[in-house]
Image (cartoon, rainbow, N blue to C red):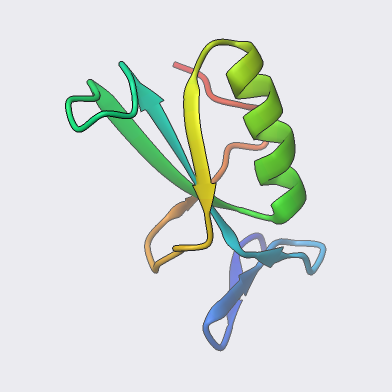
Length: 80
């Protein structure tokens, strides 16, 4: 089961820890961002996504401030 919980650390379906929060800012990272989306991801997912997102012109931050209720980073990138 993807995103299962063992104690306070969540894990993905292959046992990698979901330890990073990925925040995507549409409209810029300032307080006036038009849309802000937050996701939880493994270190590798966060790293790969950040490279692709910055290359596409998106503003992204990554930190370890995960909290309950964050959705998983979409497996195949952001879609609208």
